[in-house]
Image 1 (cartoon, one colour):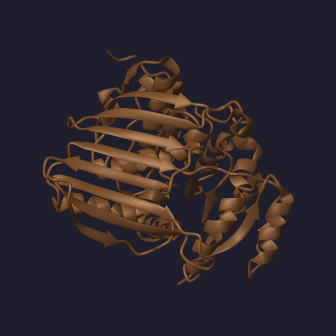
Image 2 (cartoon, rainbow, N blue to C red):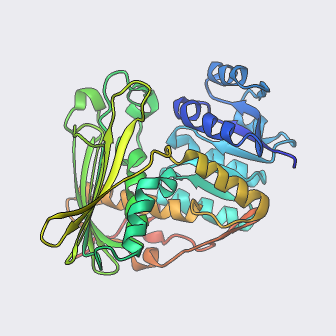
Length: 383
């Protein structure tokens, strides 16, 4: 079988750390045929490190103009994602882009509509949808291990310390999109909430904090939000790039019959796994009933690319659709807007309607536009 020829637009730290190893593991299905970056030296270094030393294009337009590319991967700063993905769709190139799908809900709506109109596949690499810890917790919920959930509590605490390449990136420190750091990582949290709950949010209240402006600049670094979900349950979401904890991810699902608790704890053994992950099943009386260690299966990026290849070549349904990524963005954007206004925001029920789309061949489903109520992140104020 001929391998799919992929072009890389963007060759930054996460591409080098996660995308390239994931694509190398799928080398029987895909070959990187061309690369480009706004930093030419980075693209040249990536090309030189690959076995086939793919062509280095001067910019993304030159790469998109190549007739020998079957698809492109876009991993660029958030403010550049929308225009580049839009041009790729107009050029008829199937796209897998890094999260978030765009800076604003209006941009996300435009990309959804354009992909449908052009019949071009667009997936968004939200790797949470393929991470073993959240899939394991969701499976326990489906099995009814603690009965009907009443409330969810998700905490994402990943402090960025000196020497962290993400902290050093200029575009993150000087970004002007709503939420700054919190938008970038917040879509992971809202994706996890939506995966676990299986429903949509209809209202949100939130606050943000700037705990260390010398390190994180003018942007908030911590968010605490409470969502009302369409099925009557509630969810609290804590997100911080500044606070410190013994775990990086934790989640609790509460019911009358008991609690499910998920933990991800950093490990500091050279050469060992980065994290230890486990789920606890807790009785209604608070006694631990079972501890389920989770295998370390990586960060889900390989599975994201495998899904993209399967959707593109054989039309298999995908989890990481652009429509799902747009809803992830809606939730975090609404929370950030609520924090700015100091009140509760209603998330229009039209946005909570199920958009369970499937990808068939080179076309992404889900032609429904997002409601104009959140265009340019202007949600109406709720009661």
